[in-house]
Length: 318
Image (cartoon, rainbow, N blue to C red; front, side):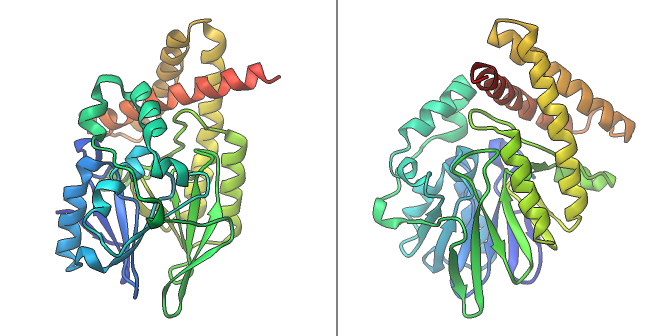
């Protein structure tokens, strides 16, 4: 089982999302009230349980399961997991609560993106009982230890129902998807790649940049990513994501005006994104057979859908 010691009180369990290592993780905060950040989808729950077992944590010890947002790769398995966690509450953004209690719209949206692969990647998606849902608004706190209160910040850009969680002990922020993806698998080559994630259908670059500004203003020591891992190079990571946001949005703009057909727009955007990022990786001498190329391929297909969705709304609302 892959468990990363982030520091003395924070551990990271690899959840093997989509069957891939170093893809999505669950952070475990070892405080008086044991707290998890993210569960991933239901097929990841056996990995989460095994990781907790290796950390000598019983499921009835877990008090809080925090979801930065409820896209299925972050929280799709929480209903299933909660069945074995009798003392846990699920903590979410106020705009996420109703979809946790009734995940039918979430499922419909994900089916539109993942098509025939949906069942294999995400089922089952179980509702969370309303009495076990806790909502946290912008600026509110949650006491998880005698001297530890987490603070929640509304951080849209990737999704409107997204918050980030500030941990004062490590001076770190759990950023979900708002600060992008960290491709941890490239660390072995000495390469740090940070890219935005622009999946449909609530990507908004202005809001994302505003959220990144908030992270920067906090003078953080750590960023904790939903995908995947953590970094202490906070300023570098944020600068890189900002740089790539501009490129992603421009690729989406060109894709939108390339055709009247959404399928062709998405394909054009995907090709331009892939070309730019692969060129960057080749410049840094990443071997052609490295698994990063398979992972990036999937990410960019989904990002391209979100970029075209964004540009359709942008042009329509002008």
